Structures are given as structure tokens and as C-alpha cells.
Image (cartoon, rainbow, N blue to C red; front, side):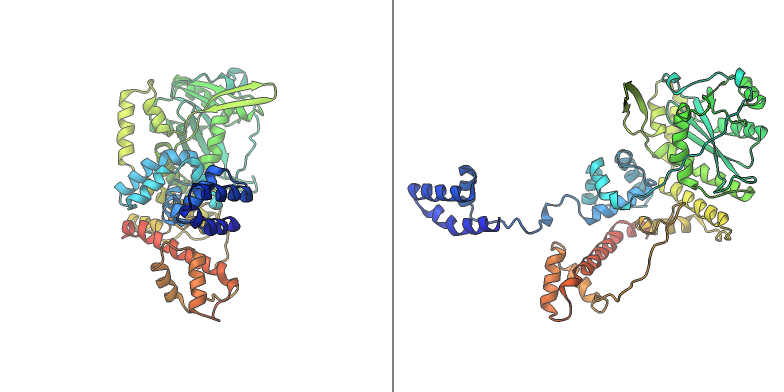
Length: 486
């Protein structure tokens, strides 16, 4: 490319000023040397300005660092959901955060975030994603199995809202010895609406009481309950509780987790994501879990979109699955013609009154208290709602760096092994960055080497790049979060 550019520069002037015969001879020779098509070669020779394509083109970038910083804030505020669900959630989330004063996005940044596709969001967030998944195996039970009919995954034929799958999630930590808290999870087959509640201990009477409380909190009537073969479900107490309320009671096949795929998915995506795999026991932990689930049920069901399996076909060994677009459980209920108008009105009013960032801040506060309690640390002193929300907002943008606000934290190195060569000239570098917003790090570093001969070396370019990246992050933080926090 460099040789071609030099050849264009050498022959272009003669080509543009020559006659028809001269241009023909020059074009023949140029096409023979470069191997280019004559039409393309003629366009190159007619051009009066030669573009150096080897240099970076920052003006061609669609999304800059400010848009990336805004996307990180919104991704953290969505509780780090996948890009396809985040893409659908962004318009609602941005409007809610601006309405409640948590963000003030400039029009170019806002339009850039809302214009991102799911694939672009994946590329931008790829370095910051992490996660873990773990499954548990529940033992079978023989209690009242003969009286409870079996329902497999294939037997669900688009049921009306109100048919729930139920399961228990054990918070026993690495050992199942002794008593520990369990979480009861209910998932609606039609909409994906998920309810969770802590059980202080495994007892069928307590389970029936908790089911009664959860039934009253549901936005739709409880029509059916499908459980696994756990003894805490397969007993006369739960069977009689369902029969007294005209609730269809069914069970899955033993050792077939896919029969309860809907609730099993929520066990990992909701419960394990919220509380992790630590051991929780005692009334204090149960109270904290209840407070956490009270906020999480609104955040997950009202604001977080989820996928729903529509069709699964098998041809030989090949299984083909078809999913609906990402939609929140609340939206599925409101668009379902089988949902009553009174329920739709109540859900719309509830959605308009909720602040997603405040809900997420409450969840993170409860999670931190649970971690302290599980690690035998004293819970921090209670702070007011405004202070808690302000501290949460101040750290929202950088939460992905050190794992803050998560249930599973990983220590990171916060110290340098070598002295920063640019500490002495920090103010000069800030002034240089402020006055050269459109220039690349390579151009600025070359200028720095010329202005300070013998002070810096070419091996320090990567350190200079990191310095510029941190400066951009600080500026983006000031543009996005500071107006809201202030």
C-alpha cells in the first residue's frame, strides 16, 4: 500500500494535466504495475488528495469511550443480564433512571447506547463478563406418589397464567450437615413470573404457610402447582392444602430435572445469582433473605426481560429450539388476553411507581449484609436510604472492575510493582489530554517524546495508553454519574 501510494503521488499530477493519449499510456502502465482494474486506477489517479490508510481513523468510530461508560453503567443497573435481554431493556431502563435522577445522558451518548445491537453490546462488554453456575440434586420421595399425577415437560401446552412449578434451593454451603435455610421458588409457566421466599427449616406445615403468603402476593390466581418428588412436597399436608383451594397438584418424574426446566432455570438465574453458594442459617439470615427477595421479585419480574421457549423439535439426534423475543414477565402478563383487566391496571401502576436503581441498591445492601453474616462478620451499621442509594450510584460505573455488589467476590491487586513514570507530570498529561480530544494515544506519545527528550522511552507507550484510558474513564464518569449524584 505504501508503494502504491508513492506511485499515485508520482504519476497523478502528470495524469491529471495530460491529454487523452498521455492519460491512456499512464493508465496502461499503472494498471500493469499495480494489477488494479482500470476504472479503480483512474479514480486513484484523478484524486487530488492521497489518504494514508495505515493511520488510525478515530473519526470513523461509531461509539466512543463515553458511550462505553454509559453502557457499563446501564449493564450494571440491569444486574448484568445478557445482551439480547439488555437491548430490549435499555429504553425502559434509561427512561426510568433519568426520570428518577440517577443518570443524565447527553443526546449523542443516549442515542448511541439505544442504537447498539445485541452483538455490539456483546463485543463491548465481553472483557467484563464472568459468572458461575452450579446445580444441585434433590433426592426422590415415595410419599403419596400414587395419588399425585405425573406431568412432564412436553405436557405443558401453553397453560393460562397461574400454573406454577415449585422447587427448593438449599443454602447449605459445602456441607449439608445440620440445619440451614432453603429458598422456595415458584415460576409461572406462561409468563415466567418468579416468586421466592426463605424457609427457616424443612417442614411441611411451614411450607404450606409460606405458600399461602406467596399466593396472596401473586398478580394472578394460583391454578396449578407442579413439584419434584421431595418429601417436603410429597405429603398429605401439601396435597390437602392444594385440594382445599382447588389447585391442580402434579409432580415430575424422578431423576428427570428437565420436567421442571422452567423453575430449574430460575433457580440458577435468580436465586443462585442473588445469594450464591454460601451457607445461611438462623433467623437473622432468613430475615435478610426475605428483605432481599422482596426487592428482587419486583426488579426481576417488572424490569428484567427473559427468553421463553416456544417450540422444541427433534429430528434424530438433532434438537431445534425456537424462542420468543426477550420480554419481562410483567409485559407477558399484560399482553396475554387471558389476564384480567384489573390485573393489567394494577401491574401498569406498579411498574410506573418503581425505581429500578433503588431496588437494585436495596438488593446489593442485603447481599452485603448476608455476606458479612455468612462470613461471621458484624453487619455494617444501618444507613439511611438516601445515603445508601448515593453510595451505590457513586460506585455503579466501576463495580465490574473489582466485583463489588456481587455475592461472589474475587480479590484484585490494587498496588503497583513499579513506580509510575508519569506521576511527576500528571498535571501536564491532563492538560495534554484536555487539549487533544481527537488525537490518538500514539500521536500524543510521539509529541511527548519530542517535547521531553531523554525523559521517556518508547517502551512506556502501554503505560501511557493506560493513563489516557483512566483519564477518559474519569471524564466519562463525571459526564454520566456526577450530575445524578450531585
